[in-house]
Length: 476
Image 1 (cartoon, one colour):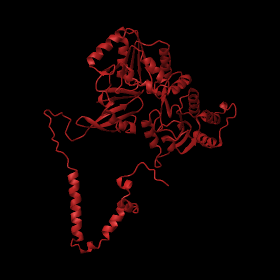
Image 2 (cartoon, rainbow, N blue to C red):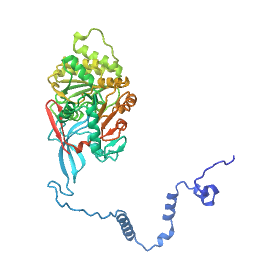
Image 3 (cartoon, helix red, strand yellow):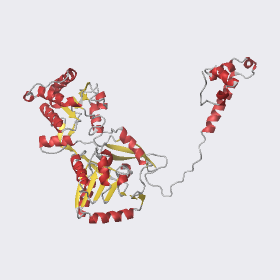
Image 4 (cartoon, one colour):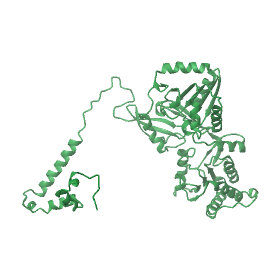
């Protein structure tokens, strides 16, 4: 058999030297060398004692470590006029609030010489009772992100704020149609500023609130059932039986920082009573992994399971027999029994953005009497007011040639998150004046004529009205 190899580990292998041939026979050369050294008879003739050997070895290790870890001398320059609350080397904590359009919590921010370095929950204030998630803790890294824009941009090039302000003012003054696209605004001050902008513009002004994750079906279902579009407050602290259909309320659904705290307080065996938790979902979630009973359920089976539970709780709804699989029926029967036992201290939630399914959930909660106990319809959640129907209509109008004169984006990236983002990107390029107020040159901002970078949440003052009864402030 001919040797037609075209590559080798080294020249030794290429020339098949004597040393290479011997090394091929030794599988573990390091171990072999150690054995040869220790078996050397000349070691017995050494005059160095074991204690001296250990002394030399210890000294050499310490000396090598100290030499390798030598730090450069950095001289600290003292303040000429030291701020009252700043002590070099001592951390200062500030109370604030975190909100990014998706997560909300009352927080404490640890700073050193004015630089935030750590975030933890504020136990003394707010709905979240000191609970924060990994996203909130990691948000401090975004403050030092090298990709953040440092200056305003015009057509992709750095420019001055005075130049941007002047040109945008001219565009707004002559525009006949202006559209502002933002995530849900829960700041009363920001809402007031948007109203002031609307009043100052001579042309037509539209504000579209668009969130990448929509809960519009909950609002629409409540509008059909109660005559008003809203999301109620859920009290897991009072719920003895919890039945969840794909709602990951411990991780991502609505207000997980609030729900996880209330939920955890009633999962303690030493408390007066423990809640019982049933989870129906298609894939494993954080919430599902903590449930007492978890059932694998296809999304196509969700409506049938809800109808089955409703028919057992309210006989008037049992118009015809509802059939579900045996595995689902076993868990559903357990949930029905527990719901009947808990009565008004029950809670059924659903994460599916479907109006019909959300109405079924409302009916089940109404049957067990949850409204007024575990569900408060008078304490409305102000988050997730997304109007994706309006957003999609806006994209369709642009495709038909009805483009606004000016479009503004505030902490919103619809080119990335819209299902037809590519179509929206094509039409956005045709808008005469487009302005992005995002911190990064993201998919939407990079297509805009002007980019006016926004501050990080740890750099600005703001206020928040997360629900009807709660207000909070944030500070830089």
